[in-house]
Length: 346
Image 1 (cartoon, rainbow, N blue to C red):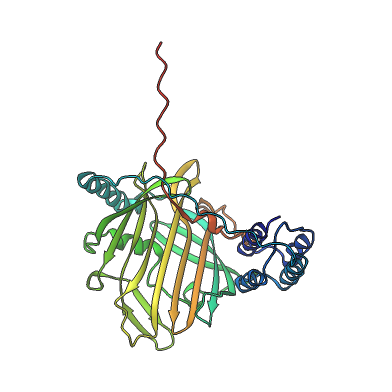
Image 2 (cartoon, rainbow, N blue to C red):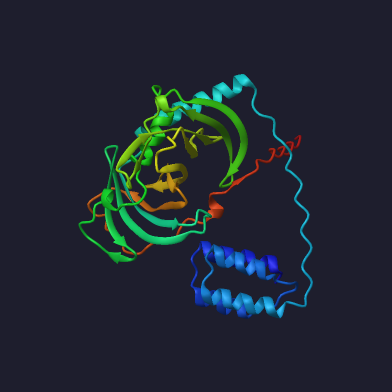
């Protein structure tokens, strides 16, 4: 293997939380074709590689000390650009997206799912994340309202633990209410074309949006001082080119008072097509909420699994699903459509 391949493998193992001992045993069997530099081992340790894996990597680095460092790879050429829609077409597209978003909640069935929230923290302010705890909840969506039942904390079953008393970063309302506010006529969010993108293999329209503080209902609560403020926000929405369904929105808050302890809040919400009872619905895939209070940072990574119809026969599961891999959330450049082959003349 090359050093680059080893680094990519360890990064993937960290994201998927593979067993430290098993990863280390695999690393011990690797033979390198070029030098693994000490700085790269340190970077992997900082990202969260386990102690046994780090020890095996250091021995691998020592064994490859006499090999040459691989030359840097040439950057890939930029993809061919796609022209944006003309102004009239943009307005039509945006109208379709907004109308679909406003009707979104009316299209959803009553359902249940499992929400797994992995809560991270970093006291250094460098995004060197450490896992604080893992909270598993049973989410019920009935008649347009969500209900949360905490079932496990750190793989241990629990009872009588309220969702709103878990502590950590706090939002007013659920992510559905934030989605509704962005497209509410009273919010009057300002939209403008931004770019084309590819998300989970689908071509996306991407529009920038802005909600000023004067029309925002987004609140931030600072537990350290027991104070709540309203903040404006700006970000991006990603809508499927074929269906106009919003498949992702992300934003960062603005106009946070300098005297308020929390000075940065970011929210990133991804959706995916989910089959429930033979019908396809657009439902949350993963949400990422990050905030900073001085140098202390928090990150709540919530993923959604096992969607099914709501019913009395539905049982609670005590197996914690694996996290949604980061690769499934990454935006990719949009490529021009390939011309369709001409039909043969009869």
